[in-house]
Image (cartoon, rainbow, N blue to C red; front, side, top):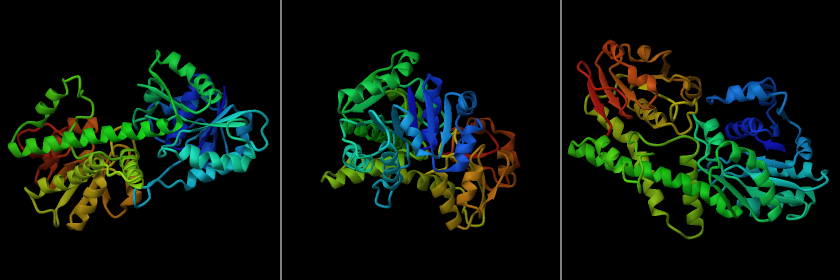
Amino acid sequence: MQLSIVGSGYVGTTIAACFAEVGHDVVNVDIDEDIVATLNDGDAPIHEPGLDDLVAEHAGDRLRATTDYGAVRDTDATFLALPTPSEDDGHIDLSIMKAGARSLGAALAEKDGHHLVVTKSTVVPTTTEEVIAPILEEESGKTLGEDVDVGMNPEFLREGSAVEDFLSPDKVVLGSETERAAETLRDVFDPLVARADDPPVVETGVAEAEMIKYANNGFLAAKISLANDIANICKEYGIDSEEVLSAIGLDHRIGSAFLGAGVGWGGSCFPKDVAAIIAAARDVGYDPAMLEAAVEVNDRQPVRLLGRLREHLDPDGARVAVLGLAFKPGTDDVRNSRAIPLVEALLDANADVVGYDPVATENFREKYPEIEYADSAGEALYGADAALVVTDWPAFADLDAEFDAMATPVVVDGRRIVTRREGIVYESLV
């Protein structure tokens, strides 16, 4: 099929390259000329394992990029993969989505035949039908359900494994309101489903598909926060929380995934999505107490980590190494990283902060140019009074002699990845 993807960010670039991989002809539409040029040169504009290879393989063949919205007229379906950032009150900002829908609608005004517009961005229930669809109708002059249809296909991509997640999905969710839209979505995803050994395909309504994404992330965020709450209690009793959580994970009703206790969840999805569905629930008169509690527990974890540090030294004037700046290993994304509240608290306490991350240093430097950055974990630890382990990069598990170069080897581990040994004062968060 001929597909167009509006937006060449994290999701847009990944799904474009993966759709090309399963045999579709794909064009990315983006207003950023540098990103368009990067894609057409065969390079990925973001750091994601496996993505560089796919873009390099398909660029100039089944994958191309352009700034011209007119390219959508030569395609059968368009996926809107545009940012929906959080507003201060938790609601999502739809301004970029609306602008994209207007440009798309104007381009479709000159297209003959049917076209399917699929929301790929994460939006609260009813957004596609009540916000996006009317814009498309107004700008295109076409009738919804006749000349143009809308659909919803939520993404479940984890940063650091997005390519694998797309090509080997746990499930595929296809939201539509007409049989023609449903049939087009099946045609788009049939090659992926066949290649991925027939994962479950959920065909549902558009609003239901929108809600599935929020329910998915809300549940996972709450599961992590509950694991952290249990681990915090274990810590107060001197109980090994890993043994406890590992044991309950053997219960098939619970499962072992997302029971890793630590300094909390961050990134571009969980914080934004949980805040958005909380705000949306309040808008319709419901108090989402469980989700609110999940956020409260998560926000408390960095504070507790700093509290563990204070048990061993006063950060005022101390040189503190922060190991891990990305919100999770395998990505250079620092959005809502747990390092952010820790660095801010350390600066407020007048600490001398030195940060290190294998790939996210430059992104973090844009936010905090005032702190020092090291080129290796060993360099960050050299002469430090304390170290905070924030991101569970596998390389941090191999640190050993590097701790001997610290001025006072106090290690507070927010991810329980460092091995406790003689010669360092080791404190885990949970």
